[in-house]
Image (cartoon, rainbow, N blue to C red; front, top):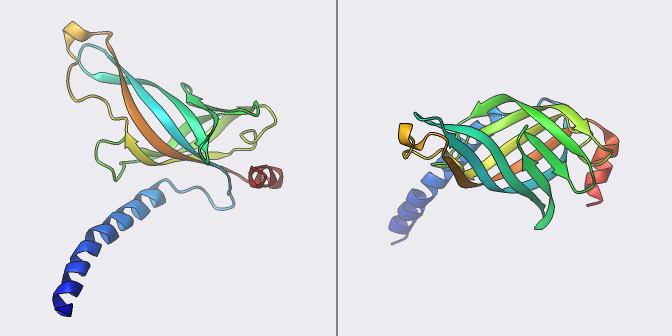
Length: 176
């Protein structure tokens, strides 16, 4: 009886191990450069906006709220830009992309900060990772010449990790 139970349990664990290995490979493909420290971890929930150009759905912008430990902390929008409730903002540019391990999800990303404003938690950000994406992929159909200009708002969720090198920012994060 124990042999069968062990085999059954082993069979159940194999898919979990494979999923974990896939996620590790994805994270490595969008890895933050050495020396960067985690400043802020936020959950993004919102929509990815697409517009039909008459042939295909074209990405327009994200529109999301950012939550830290369940509390609304800021927003994420076109640019791409992230705004914190403390008045700081950071704009990013994609430098690496990998498919999400979750079916139907937008890719995971590594973005380099290209501009910041304000004196809060986001002002010292150098890199942003978008991980654990769920949903948000462009619709698979419904875009043809008759629907040109139509908009589609697709729900998504993601984990955003903000990295920087500064000591001051690490202290600001730990006080949250």
